[in-house]
Length: 180
Length: 159
Image 1 (cartoon, rainbow over the protein chains, first blue to last red):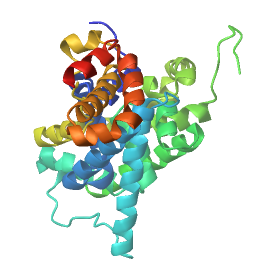
Image 2: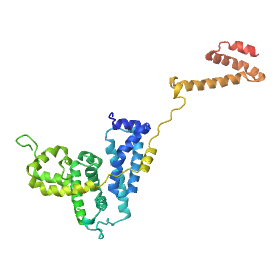
Image 3: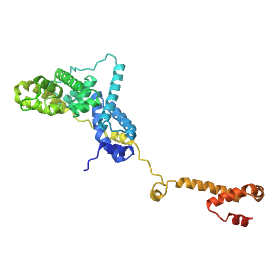
Image 4: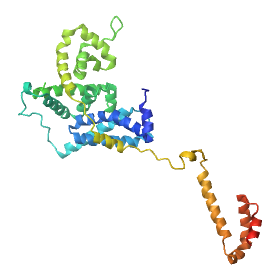
């Protein structure tokens, strides 16, 4: 199959070519919804973020200038939408912290895999937002340090620090919940 | 920093930092440091064993986190919200694409001229005669411009 660049597809999608539009959606919506789901811990809100991210992308396509990678731009928009939602949550629930310890958790040997997964997902979503973003982009989605730093509009050094803190915090939380 | 073989070397402290941030797999480290880190870890496995084991446990938990599927309904809605292809007008499609772009303007001009001529020709005789002096000259110019050289003949026959 011939290599087709993002820019080709963007140009065609901007002109309304349905196959280019489908290509962009299929290539990038999984990453966007995954990032939003991990950040927000809520599927419906993650879908809303994905929808809004693509609406903004469609508006941006006609004047698209390939200064940034489309993927980076898209993830950055999604991340900023997630930050907005998390900020509103904090404002509507001042002082309320997420429940981290479930006294009814079953012992680790009886913990089903799905429960372990849920515990990990909850622990990621409960991380400070920039730590959760760094961990999701690098450890779960496989973005390079440079890409993740660009998406988060930070330096690679700062990203590394966020990742180290995220992993330490996650390890402590999961150990507390007998998952790790 | 380089070793005697001119290869980059990393401090042990830096390697602990890398493991702490990126996990146990050196391929997840920043590209520029991967090779040097892998060499140092291989050279002193005992030194990094505990840190690697701890990182590996967390890596395996993170690997359990599934990909998030895009629901079909969301995909449909993303596609529906995308830019739509402009429908080609009838003039642009088919035979029309071989015609010059100024043709519609020409057609409108012809229509206007035609209406003017029609109005002039069909004016009642009394009105026409009253206006004959003022309009004959203008009509002659207009008909000449349209390529009707026999305007005078036409007006004579209608009278």
